[in-house]
Length: 179
Image 1 (cartoon, one colour):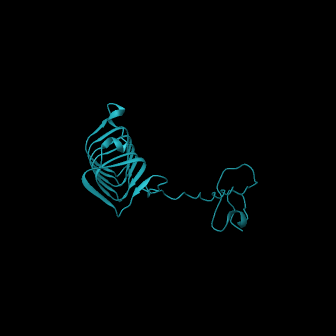
Image 2 (cartoon, rainbow, N blue to C red):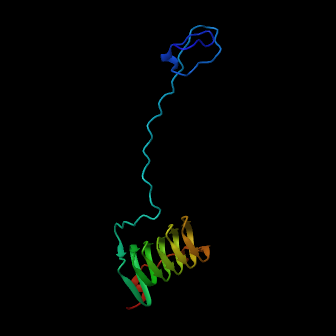
Image 3 (cartoon, rainbow, N blue to C red):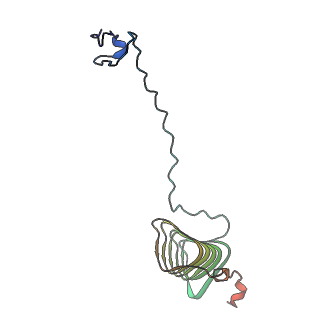
């Protein structure tokens, strides 16, 4: 048993060895202190998403990382989605153009939507342009909407398109003349 505190004797099982209860109570009845409730188990955190996750292309065309397209007045035209993981030295027109993390384009890209995860040396013209954190762009941007992720590198001028004709890609290869 413990020595009396404030005229009240407390059993050691309530207070514990070396602990004393202090307080002002006119009642000789002593209550054990409420024990704190155990903390709920920690919630599982979802795995972190990388800023520049690899692109999974469903439908469309892919220029693989082992492919390089070089030539004078080269123009690639894609009427759907085009993923460039290789190198293009020429212009690109498409509905949706994605320059993958290993992709490099030297030329103008004109599309309805452009995503850059790799390198572009040239102008970007599109309604919607997204520069991911791994993007390296050296050229002017003409757009309606622009998203630049933290970490992206951009050197050039940006301006809003005067009208849709300025950023609308020509997707008809027959209008470019014979090969």
